[in-house]
Structures are given as C-alpha cells and as structure tokens.
Image 1 (cartoon, one colour):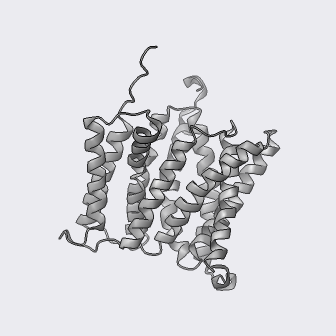
Image 2: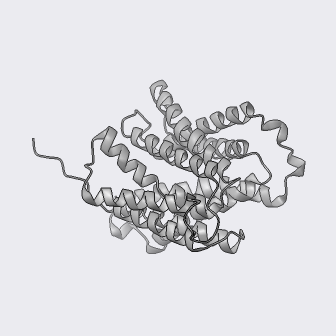
Length: 306
C-alpha cells in the first residue's frame, strides 16, 4: 500500500464514489436489460466483452497469460461466480425488483463467514457472529415471507431461491480463491474469469434456447444503453477503481461497498425504476445491512504462536 503522500484525496474519493454508486446502479441496469434480452445471454455478452478487454489489456501491459493449471482454477471460479452467481442474478431480476435483489445479494458476507467456519477453518463461530448470521437470515425471511403482515408483497419465491443460491455460489467461489492457483495480477485473473464465465454463460444461454428469442432489431435504445453501462461502467471502470483502491486503502475500507451498494440500488429502484419501497423492504434491508456490518467488522482470531 502506498504512503498517504502518494494518494491524492480526489482520486480516493472518486474511486470510492465509482464502486459505491456504479456497482449499486448495475442492479437497475440489469433489470432494464432483462426486460428485452434473455438473462443468460445478456450476462454472457456483458462478461465476454468486458473480460476480453481486461484480458487483452493485461497482455498489452506485459503480463503473462495464465498457465494450464491456472486456467483450470479460473474455469472453476468462472462457473461458480459468473455462470451460477451472475447467471441466476440476471435470471432472478426478471421476477424480483432490482433493489430487493441487491439487498438479498448483500447476504454474501454471511455465507462467506459460514464457508470460513465450516470449510477453511479460519474463523470461529462466536456469539457475535452467530447473532449477526441470525439477524441477516431474519432479514431475508422478512423479504420472502408470505405470512408476515408488513405491507407490500413478498418477493417471488423462485426468484428469492435463485438469489440465495447465487449468493452461496459466490461465497464458495470467493473462499476457493484462497486455495487455488491463480495469476498474481488481479486484473489478469479477473479478466480471464470474466472471459471464461462469459463462455459458460453463452453455453447456458444456448442450452436454454435463448438465442432464438433474441432479436437485436427489436431491442430498445434503453436496453442497449443498459448493456453498454454494465460492460463499460459496471465491469471495466468500476473494477479498475476497485483494484486501484485495494492498492491504496485498507481492504476493510474498500469492503464498505457491501453496505452502500444495496442502499444505492434500493433508492435508484424506487426513484428511477418505479419499484415499491414499503416497511417490508426497509425492515428486511436494515436487518441484512446490520448483519453485514457486524460480520465484516468482526476481527478474525489471531494465529496462535507455534
């Protein structure tokens, strides 16, 4: 991490603004896009183009292409993070409002913590973590429950299940990144994962019969703009800002995007997407965000001296 003298304040603030607001706004862009373009195909186009740009950019900077062993790791992560996680997110947003989708996906830190406790053994289940996990799951239950009388309509059950499976898949993929052989360059690694993920998504789109349903001439300018925004702003610019921040700020500070993105998504969904914002949404989102904040600020146990 560079010293403070080499970190202009305006660049830090701009980078944070990008990962906060651009990533938060991508949920609405997905919602706009899947109204007219089949979901897996839309995701495939996004990540094929963005991944190719980042991959070629890395090669142009003189970075090595991944080894055969690294491509195997990249392919596994591409299936988990892009094929399953993003594929299901795009699919679910046909049935679930963008703001709610962002809120449910914010439960990812809870699943990551469970992965660390169960699989990696790098975290212990303390009373604080158990309470945080319970609060987060209660937030999800409020959003999907058809029995609680909190006003508003419970979110679509299939959509909610898809989002939870997507979050779980992302968490498993994130946990595996610590165990797998990957390129040292984050840009090369992520570009290759996006590229491979785009290929898997395209195969899934073909298997689901999405290509015959896609008629480019019938797609509106609004949907094309949403796709361009997802590629350029959501994948290339925001990811570049994220990687830059990781080299200039602490991971804890950078990780605060997990708190802000759902709030941005809910606000944009309400004001620009015409999505409902009732007590159910507010209470569910609040519980999930409290859970995320507690989990991500819980210190990990220090290694015992040998």
